Image 1 (cartoon, one colour):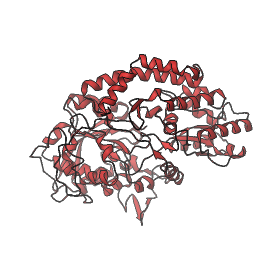
Image 2: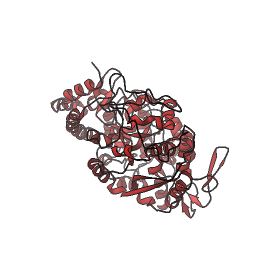
Image 3: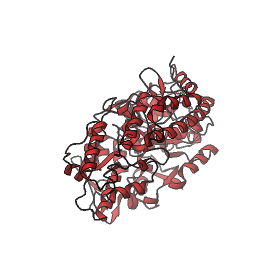
Length: 547
């Protein structure tokens, strides 16, 4: 799931003046206060710059909050930890937290000021609540020690995106995972064998064409309960599909609903009241009304939706590049002969061929630092190590693939995993797994796979590479200017948006299901107005500097 977030952009000049070895940080660093004059340099390299392999000048140990995933449970003897100690002179004082308890435990430690120095797997929105307490380090004040990060920010054109994460004091507190290009993932998977039998050989270019294809498939396969039955409706209706489709209708929705406001080029509008949101909801309401989409999509659990696909009750379902593998395995195990699945490129819509700002975003979950980290004797070495592992090309490849000649080979840029190791089905049946047995390809070390496009594609199936390439031909909606909120305004905005979003989600489901006709849209907007929509939009636009 990708998060949509707009945060503070400071008006006026930022306090800068940090010296860089690789590129200028005048447009990136700074904040409310300059970095302290004296920082701990134990283990730090004097000549560290972009492209330099980090190796501490003496052994150093960093404290780290580790998110322990059950699919690759932590092991002290992992190769990645041994290699970091042997080659980088780095070891860790780990605080292990199970994935099931990650958010709560991390937040408790950050709130109390008891977190380890390095806290990965954290989004900007996760960190906002801790900024005022002073328990987080304003990392923007220390960018002179992070040449790989600053180089990628500038070369990949991410400066404005980074500015949107700034807080009222002018600082940003999260080092995000960086993507060279967007990483669109969610779409709809179709039973391509049934499509072809119905005479359809090409993917739909528009959502209207998709509806026509569903109708054709339904007519050719009367045994289907519905041609399309969707999933991911835990906190709202078909959240993944609505997010994927939203940009094409000129709005934001589903998992991308975010703060509930959308930039229209001049000002922020309340998303749930936009004409584009009405058109989006109306489209899916029409699918239900025509019997083309299962109305239970709005509330059913994922397993039920998947079972309908496998049992032949439906022929299309929300998907991503990993889920489609599970669908295929389930169809094969169920003995469904001739079943073939493919993912369609998200169709265009009334607003064009676009991705919404959240889908087209290029930040992944990142790292925050405890405010006390700057007092450590090895603080500069810590920053250099983080910069190397998470933002240098060498570190990114190491975290993803391991060690060349041991876990993989590289023939002219074409990487091949060792035959005895598997990951993502690259070597099915291999006795070892890259993350489980070696510790590589682990979100803790890869910042949710933020990466160069080359590395991102290097472990993907050709169908996924092709899908993302076609998706990245789309226009990405302008996310709009950053929204500057102080602590009290943020609390006020959170309460207002929570009340408004409750109304939006209730009506979105009711409209799609036909429980409320689309003719009652004006009544719905009036209810949003009664819930404080105008005040919330005014607060947002004022905070964004819109007059």
